[in-house]
Amino acid sequence: MPLLEVKGLEKSFGGLKAITDLSFSVPEGQIFSIIGPNGAGKTTLFNLLTNIYKPTKGSIFFNKKDITKLPPFKIAALGISRTFQNLQVFMNMNVVENVMVGCHLRSKSGLFASAFRLPSVIAEEKRVRDMALEALEFCGLKDYSSQPASALPYGILKKLEIARALASKPRLLLMDEPAAGLNDTETMELCRLIEAIRDSGITVLLVEHNMGLVMEISQTVLVLNYGRLLAKGSPRDIQKNPEVIAAYLGEG
Amino acid sequence: MKRLLGFYIFSFITLVLPILFPDNYYVTVVGLTVLINISLAVSLNLLMGYAGQISLGHAAFFGLGAYSSAIFTIKYGFNPWTAIFFGLLIVFLLSYILSRPILKLKGHYLAMATLGLGIIVHIFFVQADEITGGPDGISGLPTLSIFGFPIDTDLKWYFIFAIFMLITVLLSLNIADSRAGRALSAVHGSEIAAQMMGIDTAKVKSHIFVFSALIACIAGSLFAHQQNFVSPESFSFFFSIELVTMVVLGGLGSTFGAVVGAFILSILPELLIVFEDFEVLIFGAILMTIMIFLPDGLFVAIKNKIAFLAFKRSQKEVANATS
Image (cartoon, rainbow over all chains, first blue to last red; front, top):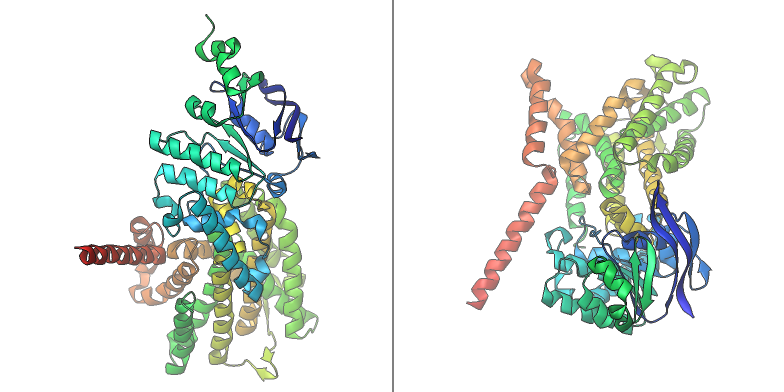
């Protein structure tokens, strides 16, 4: 049974169709990659899935539930989390606090209880910190926990976003170009990390330009071109597909 | 204990000052202004510093609290505490209804909308003279009493203001270090990421807007009773700007930053009186100098500097220990 199902999705910005009649489904437990040339609509697709953009047409089902019109914070509550292509780390906080925000859905103290620091808040605070440290350890960031986010290098911030997303214990994790800007060693580490995330039972939807990484770890690859589905299949099939080769190398 | 160490020291100083200097002009007269301004700046910082939502109309809620107390006690003969309660109710409803549409706006547009709110409320104070007494205001508020003890001297008012201010500071410190506070900082840091972490950003912003308005409202009621008099001047657009300046001067996002900013901005004009005609000029020059050289705000810049020095020292100790 698919975890995520997209049916006839369409998005146009004015006259420009960024996504055209796109349908696909993501089975649970996979690393499912979306590739395509620049401007193919990959990030737009992510923004549609999380309803940061409203689709022009079509519908999205997560775990059989229609999420097409839900606001992003409700989609998150159902178990979808994501990282961003252009980092969206909370630079005004330190590392562990960033990840503690990720635990928002797994805790519940409101403004009033927090302001008066009721006993329940103190207990929850400790629990949330432990959950955050666990996520940091999973991503190999425990040593950075008390550092301000603004002082950290790019590679660490990329991992921090992953830790923050994992802290919400999602069922589906959308990763938007996690390897962009990373060196070879960091990319290798990232490969292992993504596999570990999948092995922990989280389905991963990956947008990535690094073909080595995509082909190595994905079970399914979907190719987008000009907002349309060009091909879908195993990494091996995709590498042999003539249309995909043409789209990437230019038609001769 | 360690978390609130600064707060305990600050409370001690605040409460001991009037015992040591009960007749000092700077404690019992200027001190009252300082205390009320600190409460207001700290409450504004919740919205501006934590959640990153500017408000140029904070004085409106301060004024509504003051006018509610004056109108309900004098025109309707309510008990002062009942009047404060009604003031809170009005401000609660008004701020709650306005919060969602206003806080949908961002940046300059939010500034414009809150500015408009401040000005409209001020115009209401000036123009609706049948209710508000117009430009002359309303005088003769009854004395406020707590459990039968009348608050009738400046020294007593000092303690009331001080306790109110300390509670405000404590609530603000508590919020900073909590799930609610982190949600606000997340909205400040990246609204999209905050939503993806499951934060209902519209709700969080609206709650803090209301909370901060309610604190300003109580401050207004206390202020009105202490002054015995309300007039529109105290709640003008200029006062809203002054509050914003306090928060920025001390350091956006830091509770004690707001405290320091409010303290300096309230006490500096008093100290500069000796310069007579050049008072305002020097005042402006000092503010500009601070903001040019310490753009993070006075308190935050100093705090960061100390943290940096402590970090360097610990590095040195590690180096010494290993060599």
